Image (cartoon, rainbow, N blue to C red; front, side, top):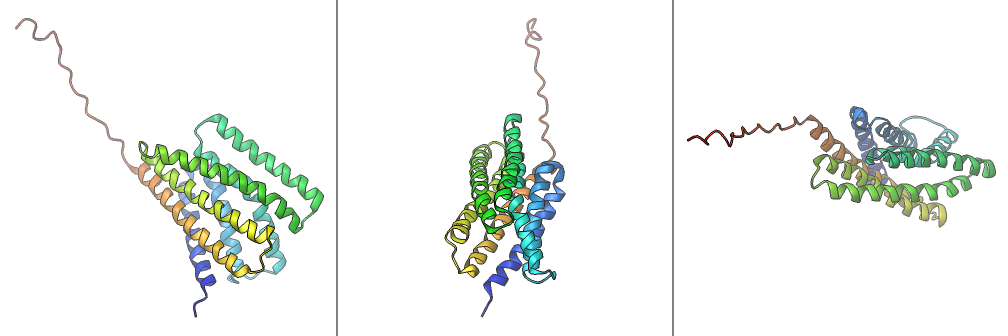
Length: 233
């Protein structure tokens, strides 16, 4: 009988690696926003590799990596979402939100310490922010993609993020709030989420890469006739 969790985990690891490579190749397009997303996905990739025993690590190390990933989740994604806004005001709002969220996490850490309650408290607001902004940018770029081909790539990337965070909200409620003991099913949803999100993000990056390589079409200038040229005929 097939072990679907291992199959899905292998698929997510492969696609996550491919997406990280595409993000680094397109660094000049998204700059620190793409670096933030690449680092975020690389954390997930590394944790998945360790959890499957491909790289030996103690359970304590794996636990610390999971804590680190969850603490960096919201700030990294808010920095990534800066890529999707064209206004300086929007960029400042996302940048200050990322900094404010780090401060929020530090304050919560002072009260709870490195405990499961820390993740329960900070993950919820982070999911709300990232889900709301992801869907906002997704709908925005879907509308503009009819006139701007490059925005179709942005719609795919933001759509992949919106889908992922919608699934993360479900997993957060089931795992952290309801404390569902059936961890195996949650992990299947987790890996499937990253498979679909990585595919969608990769398609968006490939569209953007293709549009960048296209040479701009220069329309030939139409020679205008002088209206006075025939006045003496």
